[in-house]
Image 1 (cartoon, rainbow, N blue to C red):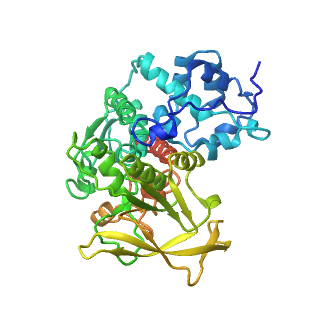
Image 2: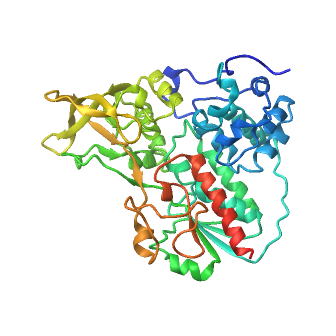
Image 3: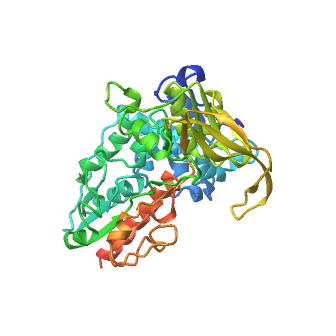
Length: 460
């Protein structure tokens, strides 16, 4: 019998006043009984609306049915038929806007906690399961994957299983892309990401780190060595506010701030020799998940007051509802309907404050959100000694500048068709480098699509 409870099983988590002082994972995960109980809320709809919201087409009702029967390893096998990174997706995918938004249980209550159960299954496998040997018949063809973020890892995983010799080229010293440098340890532990990467290595994927395509190697050099190339380099170039004082000491881009903390383990200083300056009064500018991550990191680094400064209201915050709630619980202060006009420094060039202008919401703009309008004469000063700018990122222009004939758009994104094909034959691209900054699961979906297109092309 299905479980007809109108609410999800709550996710166990560290207490807010404990977790905001450490970098351990906030959510501690379902128990076996909780996962089974939640899976039994699925009605196993014949038309499977939840699947229409999944960019990698996980067979959701099937894996939930297996969990309901306590067949956890079978459930893992079902998920990984289409999703190479279930432990990652179960933690960071915006399920509330994707698969769970389509769940019919959400009409009269809360949808099934699909992401929470997926995380349980992946974690159960990591602790108790064994990787099954996959027989791969090599086809003698080679594919280069540029970038080891979620899109590149997904493409590489699909292609190696199809018999290709796959080599990933990564600019950093550690593979994982945004999963390693962009998402904090308390949301996505690095050992979880590393385990997913190790699975790909065991399948035969080669990873070349410290290799910058466009500098260490050129794309045309890769063309000479490989039958096809997939570019999944993400959107790692930070955007700035372009206001006075942005060059003051104490002003970070979110990219730098989070990379120092995450990839370079700055939160373990002095155990790891990566100091991260974080003052007592920190303002993070932006309202997305990256802004929430930066603010919550600052709190854990010892800041007394951490502010999210956003020019719209709470309803317009683009961050996941769960991330906003967690930030509020941890003591992050929200200064909504505020917009910075200039940073203020002291005589030594260090940040000491920011001038803010109050806003009010007008008519909706092209994005559908109400447009912020300045309230004249409302300027006021907020005393801060650290600022983190988290208003978006764009693709790094290096590959564009060093690859003749590669078409890009006005935003610097590589132009690719629905299958990932670019303006150069046998070069494909996907994820944030094509769409601009988006979600992990959408990048993974692009990687899957391009891998299938590459296989179809090279199989002819």
